[in-house]
Length: 488
Ligand SMILES: [Zn+2]
Picture 1: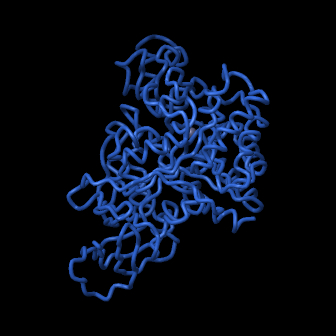
Picture 2: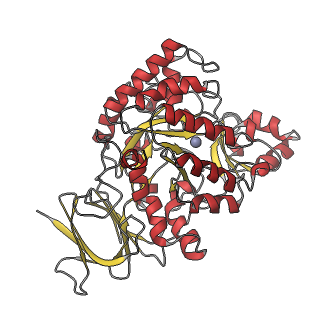
Picture 3: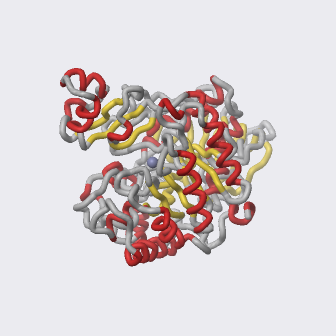
């Protein structure tokens, strides 16, 4: 039986504890031993002295549903040290719903072309991921907007009782087939007409399971306080842990509200399991939303079906060229993608540093000019927020990328370097790890990641990606997740 020993690295085990020098042996896809390093290199071991070893990073928030199948090398993630991606966020998913491929409500296009949506059930999607053998593991949520597209004839209205029942039944089937929870994207036009009652009725399928409720809030602007209250009420109704997706204070009028918003989350967390994720950037990205087109938010157009030659340009420059108002220019570009420079650095700092916050990239893998978070989020947290600015300690940053996320999502045998856990590991140089993706040059791999193992498979080494792929579809275990146990 082959085994690998990674010897002498400073081990950060995912719990937030200080590192210690250790020899870690992996065998048959699991961590077989963790011993304090004694200074000598065991025969045949990998010399990792001077480097940091951590649980493979878990990307808490992705839209990799379909690229995990169509581009299974998952290069933007593996090069950051990410070994598991959570897909199905923001109400959009490929795992159930929209199997006919001809009607893709916004923003489902973020996941892929219509023809790629071919999975009528969650079980069929899960089987396709396993068959594709992606480089990372995949844990999937089921999206509310995807369910709406399947069961409603039009999305500018609330669902009927029968439609709610049908969506809840689909979600229950997916949960039984291994889905980790339910997501909504209530700010988007195709979900905003869903009442709180509709979402509660569907989310009720989470009761008695370990599934989580993840939500792109109904408002990230002026209405964010009420939107958080709604999210907490839905999670309580569903008896499910709450994850607020990509928490931010979007738009100049909201800057500085992060302290009050985090306090609101803290309050709710006192009586219910509550958390959030965020990415380490002050710009957001999605499809081009006319509601966010305001003069004080600089907007870069990343793609436009109507005006392809404008991709990569700033919206205000396009509007000036055309001699029209910003909103009119945005209308002419639709459908389109955008990067919105809408956040204040101090808010991002406060949210990222908060004890409830996990790191999630929200990377958009199908965007031809993706926000740099797709290729850079995890190394950027360490390079910029730990090493350069000291906002976080390295053990705490790693916890936000590993153990905290595994606990929150119910990934019971991942997120920690402990004997018996899955051998998902990342080896990196803490002095050199850095993101190289930039807004004007976003598809740049990070540097300083020197080893990645996924279920024990060496997926990246000092020469780069190996081509071996060890990922699999993760299925929610029947046991309740640790936050259910601890927090009630
Ligand atoms: Zn979102």
